[in-house]
Image (cartoon, rainbow, N blue to C red):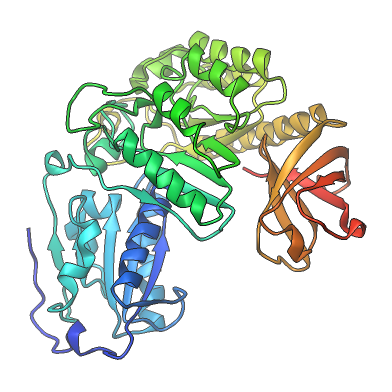
Length: 472
């Protein structure tokens, strides 16, 4: 599908031929960040210089999300930012929003190129003959054509990399547009995932976060087959043997795919950390049914309790949607009480957003927006209490922090293995280092003071005092 502008004579081929520049902006999930980073490396390999998004650039690439209406609105604002930085810069929009509504995006003033799911890794092929015009060009596809896998991983913070192992989803949750935007479930080959992990390790990165649309479905479509050639358990067992990676996190996994064997393996593994993010969406079985989720609350509770029985120190996060059509006050209170009684560490709370072409769009019982916002606020308040309780449960325990590399106004930040966010006074010798600490007390600002017990590199002991807090 194509839509071409009618005027404008400035072509990309005539722009800044000495050293072309490119800038990127990513909206949405870790998977998007992994893909943006891979595309950026392709540009650099082809002679481009990467610059910050608010700087003048020859090309601006915007990788979009479309989970909520807010993500769509934000895309428009990002296009305006690019145009302010360089009105003659070529603006390229890719990602989920680009696949779902390409004609809507190409109508945004300043957009020059919109690429669908099968073309987003081929931006460079389209640039040379591209003209800056009043209306851009669309190269889209039917989502059924999105059936191949492109390996991706992110690099930016050299302490952590997001590694894409799976893409697409075969689930048909009634509120979700992702299958329409990314296509069927498919996986990278086990051999290639291990090769990418080793490549990441050789660059000095010490933590990998496994990402995907439905990560626990790994192995389906691995070689273009519809069946599973490997399972997620096969994947994590193999990754646990990769040398050079200190930590591996599972970004998110569906409760019905989080099998006993996976939890048991993480509990005794060399490198997988005690941190799970398990989407809940609702604590009401009735609403879970309307959402077409593949589990009920009892299974979810079983997963959480098994984790805590094997790893009492584990951090467990949950996604929750409030204001789904048909969610009465009673259904919401079911969710609230269900979460309150479980040892969950934090919540990501989403307000239900109407989307086109999904089953929930035609459901009755639409919840007023003010009620949705009120329920969101209640769960965010509950999340703050859960975070505090989790921090208190970790007092006087010994954990390991992986420090990051950036000087943030005199502080260095990092995470414990069980996802407690840390900071201490800036010391360049701590950057990208592991440090054993004792969690001492929570201060008046909600941070926890720690005492350094061991350094993986020689550092000045005057920097042993630190403060930490849970990040969500």
